[in-house]
Each structure stands twice: as C-alpha cells, then as structure tokens.
Length: 279
Image 1 (cartoon, one colour):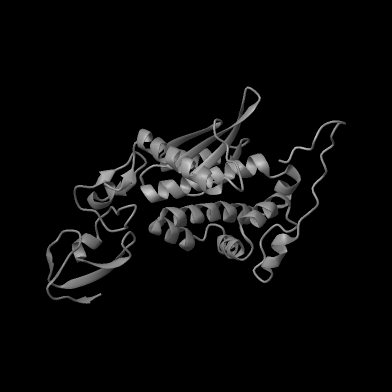
Image 2: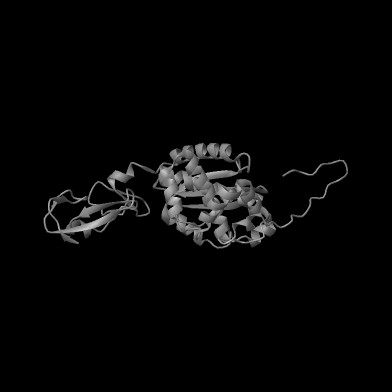
C-alpha cells in the first residue's frame, strides 16, 4: 500500500489518486493495481480473485465470474460432453499400451459447487475422489458396475480436461486394482496416480496452464511429484504394476526403487485345455 501516481484501477479503470493497493490476478499470475473503493467491493471473481464491479456473471451456486474470465469457462453440458469425449479418445490413444479405461459404463455431467459438496456428504455410498473440482461415483445397474463422473461447472477448458482425465483414472483403479491391494494402497498414492495421468496428458496435449496447476496443487500431498519422478526413472509400465501389486502404501521419496517391490499376485486356476487369461 502506498501513494500512487498515474496508475489506473484494474476494476473501475479510474485513476488512483490517493492510495494504491496491489492484488494478484490468479489467472494471469500478475500484479494488478486497485483503488480503495474497489478493494471494498463485496464480490470477487471465482477464478482470478479480483473484485467485480459490473458485467459479471453469477452462477447458480453463488460463484461470481468476471466479464473477462466468463468467456473461457465451460457452463454447457453438451459442450462439456464433447470435450470429455475427445479427452477419452486422446487418453485411450496415449495410454493404450498400458491400460484400458472403462467406456460404455461411464457417464459425465457438469455439477455446481453446492450440489458437488452435497454429493460428498451423502453417507452409505461409494464415492471416490471428493476433491474441489470432480467426483466419481460408483453404482450398480442391472448387476453391472457403472460410473458417474461429476465435474465442477464454470471451469476453464483445460481444467475440465485434466479433471476428466483424473476421474477416468479413478475408474481404471476401481476396475483393475485387486481388492487386497486396494485395501493397502494409500489415498494420497491413488490421487497421485490420477494426477500423474492428468499431468502426462496435459504435457502431451500442450496444456501449459493445466500442467502448472497440477504441479502447484497440494491435493496428493506430494505424491504426484514422486509419481512424475518415478515415471521418468522407471517408466509408466512399472507404475501400473506398482498400483496393482506394490508392497508399499505410498511412494517413498528416499527410495523410489521400492516401486519395483511387488507382492506376488494369486495365480489364476485354469482347467485342462485352457490358457490363463493374460489380463
């Protein structure tokens, strides 16, 4: 805070004549100047955090998005479905050598913040990944497991894309990690693996903002950084093996080599004349 000269407020666009305040724009990660009046405005943009004065959009859950940022967010279910369908196609192509993601038993929808938070509070259902921007719900329909992926509305396209990848990773874990391993693997490792897929996808697709947001997100308590390091050192195939049968609940910073310490999986019984299923 200090005396400003010939500076203009980023919100009201008026010259700041007395006291100048600085504010971080969380979208551009730049310093913006505000006047004393705009600092006191009651609403702030959900994305950039700057106060809003006029021409802003209020979402049904109460979030406010400024005029500049609203043009970059996804609010339409049809548009979100198209984005996620393309993400699934690209994801399958990128990781086809290592894993097969569920396809016909997955639905995706946008959901506002209030409904998403209410979803997490329901007791007695199997929910996965209750983070701020996405959730995967597992249900049974006619004896078939189905997944309902909910993605927070009002997010920029890159955020929708990386969240979609993260939630698809959860569906793969649910369908492919043996129950015994699922009981021992740590939650942070599960989230770290999902974030790794999102990171590798963002890297492949050139999503610079999505990639940087993943690295800055403390959600997996550092596991994503260990997964990235392990992927560079040992490769993605070893990571998939560790997810399915690793000895440890978490990756260990001091000894990433433990990634290759695997529990022996129970052998599948076969009848004469048949071959074991390679999967």
